[in-house]
Length: 157
Length: 336
Image (cartoon, rainbow over all chains, first blue to last red):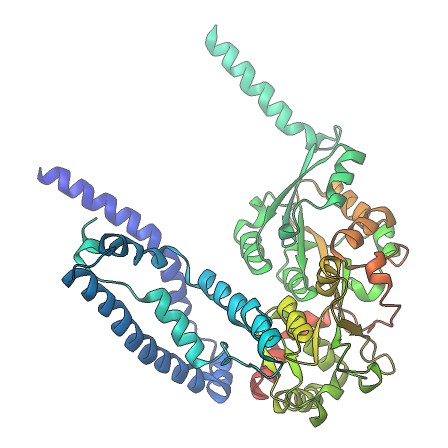
């Protein structure tokens, strides 16, 4: 029994170390920092990029908390028609890579996309939707992709 | 008895494996690492196989991936030929010692000097012009002149630009830096940024944005417009040949080199020579609306309508030499 378990552990460690190689290679590159590149980044855009990252963490964190936890709570605590379908349908967005959904969103909702083109044709040339290539556009996108209903159904298939 | 048969088979196998290096008829297959593989099976390669009987096996990937792969495989690489888009990548591969010098009179004659490595390690196969695109309903060609002039405040809020992280714009800036130096180019880029361009990381989407009226002008490669016009001939977008009175319109290449450790060097050179011939150049030009690198080949009719233009004849190696400088200039000027 114990031998069986340690064999599994060994196998798992083997697989995990293979999977870890790319991450380790990236970390190893930190051992030889390219000082000139870092100095350039510090002078030009590092602070702004870090600021953007923190702002996105805050925005997407809040968004997923409300949407993800909210939907999960509704599905778990309430009985309503279609609840069983929602229970699995809410996981579906996780199966689609974020950038694919990002492309689809941009394609549909950007200025030259079908929705805005239709709106301009219908309501006149001055009609504009908020720019999707913006902070709030990215927060919305990433929230919708990452909002993960953390219900018991998800944990035990 | 069985052992002897096995040994015999192994020996025969070894002999067969040795044949190519002992001067027997050429190999039946060459291997290409190609960053053009997303253009699907290109007719020029089929034509080569038909003509020579040499099979062509293509492994796809983007240029940085193929570069790393070649470097990691070193002398064990199966690749005989590297094909990439953008001269900067070929320049990098040559500098890393991944490409071998090829002194083929045919290649040197077919490909103009500014579209190939001065040290003959890579050669342009197709030329890609990156120029100003405008909405034909909102802009008169007379309003346009140079890339630099798009920094003028008259273009405020009317400009669509590709993000600076993309190699096409890095190469454009790199050749401008080679011509004019960093500070002049930085002033131009600051002007572009001051005009609050819409930044879009796709040439096709920039053209669609111009057609839809989101912006009046932009800078893209011309073959993207060729593809759109093939689908929708009435699209109100046309190219303006930039910098005709000054440096000429910026061009880049997709091109190829024979790898430093090619196992089938002779066949690889034969392939490159064929791809540079007017016959194959015509196929490249027709299948993707690019300009042939060999001036003897004609352009596609869709492309011919845009007229002739003067190319910037600075060697496209500048795209590699000044790529880092271009990135720094863009960062300093706040061009994202």
